[in-house]
Amino acid sequence: MSHLLETTGLQAFYGDAQALFGVDVALRAGEITAVIGANGAGKSTFLKSITGLVRVPGEAIRHKGDPIGGLPPAEIVRRGIAMVPEGRRLFPSLSVEENLQMGALTRRPGPWNLQRLYGMFPILEQKKRAPSTSLSGGQQQMVALGRALMSNPDILLCDELSLGLAPIVIREIYAAMPTITAEGMTVVIVEQDVGLAQQVSQQVYCFQEGQVSLQGRSADLTREQISQAYFGAEVAA
Ligand SMILES: Nc1ncnc2c1ncn2[C@@H]1O[C@H](COP(=O)(O)OP(=O)(O)OP(=O)(O)O)[C@@H](O)[C@H]1O
Image 1 (tube, protein in one colour):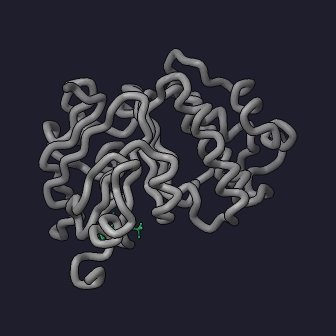
Image 2 (image 1 turned 30 degrees about the vertical axis):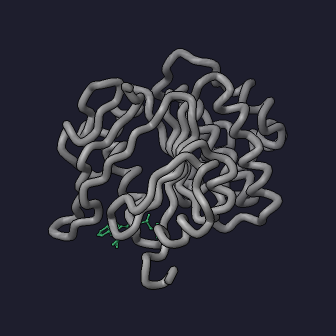
Image 3 (image 1 turned 135 degrees about the horizontal axis):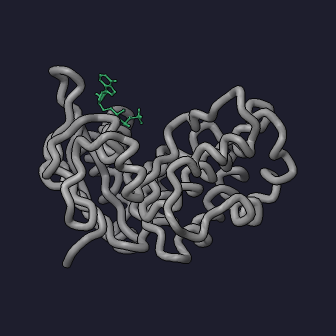
């Protein structure tokens, strides 16, 4: 079976320090894949390798069969892979709408535009002229998500959408996922909340110390399997 995106034996380094040790992940088109794991397990490095922010060998990552490892980040976006970065990283001097338009600088054909985003998150239309820094954390996360969608990617990578947000706000953000995947978008979520990750995804990869410690269909995995893969055998025993 061919996958939309596949990593094979993916290794990543920061200088001499190795962060990923042979990670094999396969994304199926139209699915949500959750990547979970403790702090420092390598989840963000995995996303950064895909988006070209951490340089890796070309063959280690294939998108639609083409090697894309190590391509410049702008080229990765052009090919249809967009990221919602950890900490949102909005442009503080720009308004909400200007932030969203930044995502459209590399625009592919597709359903997402300002009107569509405002339909999904009406609060953003109400605040479109406001400085992005004046928004609540949840609203800023909506902007970050919207900015990534504006490029009309076929793969959306989300790094810890729920970080620092209240449970009710997290639910509101994740409630957008069915709308996002309805037209076949493939999504990766890095998520600290394991229960939530399992609930919203079709498949789960658990990372531990730069390796995949567990992979399976979300509906089939037990809490015990996940906690063992998450914390390691010693803690789970
Ligand atoms: N810029 C960097 N320079 C050097 N080492 C780094 C850098 N970024 C991450 N690392 C190291 O790489 C390893 C994986 O980190 P990474 O941020 O990918 O983990 P993570 O699973 O995303 O954790 P978190 O949930 O804390 O973001 C860790 O050992 C971390 O210290």
